[in-house]
Picture (tube, helix red, strand yellow):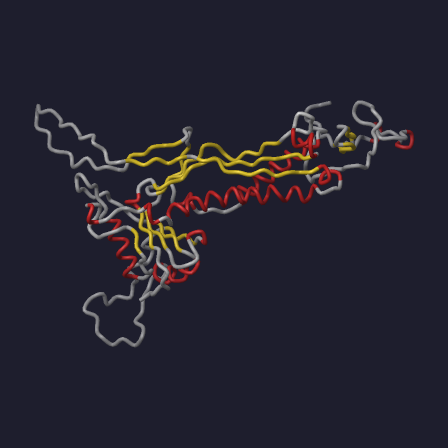
Length: 366
């Protein structure tokens, strides 16, 4: 058989491992089917119960007559397809890195002071190496097992089986998103304050109402973040705002509108700021709406890639047990099992680059 020849096979008996070559042949090579009393496989063996199972997939080419392997290939495609098609937001504000360890340890950004003038012929001063404390982010395995019974195979329930990996793929992907959101919505991950010489304003988490005053407070808190030891500012530039679905409309009005107008019949003359341009317009480059952030009025402001780190150990995998006597599940219960697994870790890399509001108060935009 030529390597580039397309072959089409029909599975006749999955348990016995027999198939039938149904590749269309040129008329000169076709045989009169009436001369063949029973279907035969590639080795010329007469098949039994040739209508027992038929696995036909559009565009699929079966290179094996082993039903578990054929099913596994289909399930793997479904798993990865649904995983990749599921939208997530965390790559837009997390630092995504690869990891080959059980856990990774990070040092906080620690300023070393301003570089001094070095006189002619004078030695350069050494930088202090007493770095600030660090953070450990651990990696964890996540996954589950799907069982496929013999009855599901024999009674043409392959279609239902194929729906399971789609759900599993989406679940694995949504699990990554939820893991990140759990990190940024945990108030215990925010420990910066002006009393500890971290900034000039105050704590980087509070039940701050989303409005002009609240946004100004969050920006001031982050942009004045500094190194505790040297007192130098870190130069934080918030560029990402994450809001719950309830806050989406207020965020659009406060940040997405390029003009402002007087409201509520106010008649007092302005002393300054008489223009109509909205000073909050496009103050951040990215606005993310995520239900995983909460069902109330929480919101998060931070700098992309600086606050949260997502570290991936390996991509998602799908493993299968074989259909043989050495496999406990199949030997005892005629059950094939497929395991889907994801392996990653996520944590707050440096909370000096993030502000979280746990507000339950409806927004006010004025």
